[in-house]
Length: 215
Ligand SMILES: CC(C)(COP(=O)(O)OP(=O)(O)OC[C@H]1O[C@@H](n2cnc3c(N)ncnc32)[C@H](O)[C@@H]1OP(=O)(O)O)[C@@H](O)C(=O)NCCC(=O)NCCS
Image (cartoon, rainbow, N blue to C red):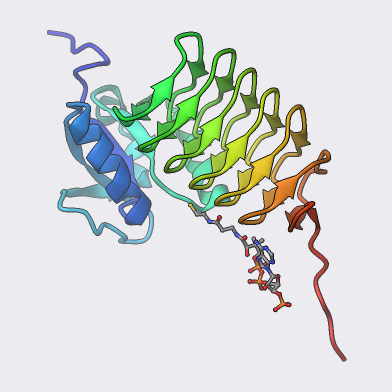
């Protein structure tokens, strides 16, 4: 018998604090979780360790499971995401039942929506994104692959977050603004203008963080 994608057990890659939250969502949504692949012996979950990322070379293992990259660190996450794509792995999408997501929202594989999130109509969320507790994404936003939105952050309508952008906890991005690839918006910042790629901004209004050097 061939198992449908819905029935395939999920393998979490990474077993730290974020993975704990994802395991809870998987269980609430009646997904079976087979175990954890670790990168650095980091399995803190009450689940079997199934090996490390070398197991992704095993075709039958890959074909028998859905995968979810449960690693916060952007570069490690991207590396594993690329390995999964190379090996044709199927990605799980984990959405907590206590989220409100408009019917036309597109959500890519490997993306998690944690409890208490609202995503409004017309928004599009890529692969391997993490939307954390009680954030909101208003209408017609675009979140490219690997974007992370912190707890309680607010994206107004039409905001674009390019690949691997990070929006800190409680930050606000006003309507129509663009957050460049790999940019970081500090916790509590208010973004009122576009943010260039790889820039870190803080404060209200958000300004580039200037590192102090001494001596
Ligand atoms: C912006 C951020 C990335 C900077 O991190 P960092 O480079 O390690 O910065 P530091 O902690 O060394 O702080 C440097 C200075 O910036 C200030 N600062 C740091 N983050 C700030 C923020 N969000 N808003 C205002 N000021 C901030 C610090 O007070 C410090 O000021 P000082 O030099 O006058 O003492 C980080 O503080 C942040 O906001 N991260 C987001 C965390 C988050 O939302 N996590 C969610 C996890 S799900």
